[in-house]
Image (cartoon, rainbow, N blue to C red; front, side, top):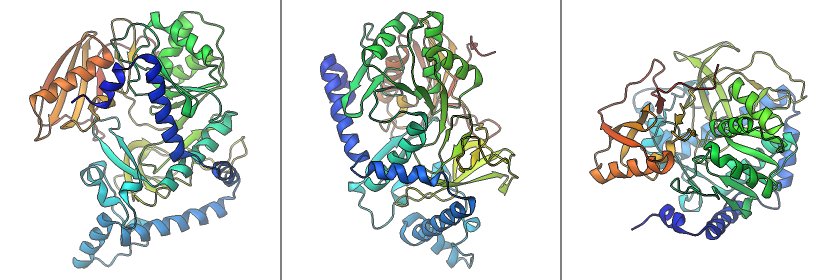
Length: 463
């Protein structure tokens, strides 16, 4: 039986727009209400709180979350019951008494982290594979969803003079157009969210004029998307000497923004580029202000920076350990997000906001695959979504038309699942040879992670 994506790709273009718009209306129902504007105003006012007031507020939220986790969340309640049976008398009221939580533990039993008084069937389900090819299942209550998008509106859009009511374009990981399609449109218009969703998989030089024409046709005010995709678009804009396109702002997500990428994107779209940081688990978030500083969102989570299980001084780099205080219905305590970074030792910013500052994030940037027709493709994690029986996977590019997929098969893996991997990769990269290489484990690097995408073709632009 064909899946929904296959059915969607068989639709003629106008019906794809309709399908995207219906989905957008559904998401808008979850995200926005008549109270959205008042929530936005509330979050904007919190940016001017004193450090003392903010610290007291955060400590109160942490205390609430720790109590809720220890008494109403199955995983943590059982953990503390076990510790008590073993004679451990440490108080769960103190954050330092809690062990760290790995993604593997969350991945193994995600429903065990949902509070007892929640009805999972009335919650929003988020399924994401992150950057390692491993899936995560997360649930948000309707209140959490609506608060989150109000906060996002305040800290990402309003800071830079745009709003959800403006027309915007996104370059993300959704396969909105089949990669075998060689004629525009390479996008869909989502009227429900005023969103032009553009394919990240068709950014070949000869297609760029079509992309630029779409941005002008739909009167797009700002761009949002994966750093690597926005950079790829910007490079082609500059190479083709397109001078009649200007955005109000470009917002990057999912990948760190390097200086050479910022320069190219700013020059191509004649506007500032602002970086954001976050994850679907909603345990930490940050966004860049107009003065180029990354401000943490304290309402989302408490961030510790650790090295060998000990806190490091302000300004020094370590592993980010985050306790979420935003999604109280699926509390994640001292969660290892998998990134390294630092908290800025210097307080204050010329923008006037009192929000704490985040230093450089040193999490790995996914390598970018290159294609024979000049495209750069990053963030291939959607290949491994939809519950494929693959524990983890790594894509290696030795030549333009040859890819190797190393993967650890789950016990239920069958040969036709391998064919699904090949088809999904070819749907995004094009007509390439794909070699499947099942392995017992994928080698980790010194920091304990492995690279989800490894391109051995030299990057032509980074100096």
